[in-house]
Length: 472
Image (cartoon, rainbow, N blue to C red):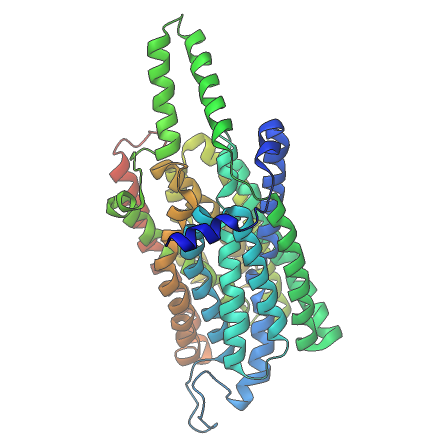
């Protein structure tokens, strides 16, 4: 272990220097937010564009039944797992698994170097996928390697901005997380253009180079807020409260220190990973996040085929999916701003209550283009707020200290749900979906998943406080 620690200590430091952060804190904060937005754009934004690859892989490999279960011919492979959905499920599962690993890695290597490592995994995963001729090879490259890199990038860019701002955290995190929605809108048509011009193998190689360079550059803007800067702000808070309290320095100091403790360790005043895992609040949050995240991707993946299943055109289905992605941009910013006023956990519950209702009463009975568009807008605005609300709720519960590690712990449960949910939904789609009957079952499956997630959020809210009007 001593050798490992010495080796880690000798690794080069990547990112904004500590001296620069101390001298120019406002510039450093702006750079961190901008770099985090670009990281969301290129990382999770690429995951949101996977539907383009799913269509290509489905057309290329389904006819030959080149599935992960090798050795089956066309007569016996009927009913096996779709190769396209298998690669996507592996990508998502590895993504969330590495949020946990990267969260712990950040504590040892620093944000900048961990981001750089993630950029190499994302870029090489996509670039090597351009040379693949078998589904299992794509599962290892675009599935495992690229998924691990995006998970590493995500945990950093989704949590690091909160350390730089004590006020308006929801609004700023909403802006950062809107980058994944913008990325989905931009990278999806870019991917389609590259495939049409350079074929599938050439397109994924080019994307690998773009992602590697772009994400490596943002690693230079990744830096946590120095402890000296935090201490300086804490002393300023004590002075401000002292002046407002008619010179009662002892009382002001106690009040300021209490505020610092809540900021650092949350309302539960938990100081280590063991304390987080022992708290019931963590498990309520964990159940809610792993179910809501799984249902979120099922909806995004299945909106186009669902639209076709109820009689709409493929162009209308693509437009509906695009509107849902676009609405997440608006939702993440506006919901984040409202969360600053109403409380993070309060808004977490309200938004997912709306999503649950929309799945049951808009999506399930939808038979027209207009109703599907209304659902897409409603879903995008409210469900899209999930990713920024996770770090915000974690800060509320457990504080800023160890945020990347705490959010990473939530990724363990999402490994199972995000890999299983698309497969289950696909079974509904393929086995029960003849003559359109199974499409409603997919909607009910997502609605039921969101319902359980919403009840878990309600239990979390009541566990923290039973007073309905308290800002939490």
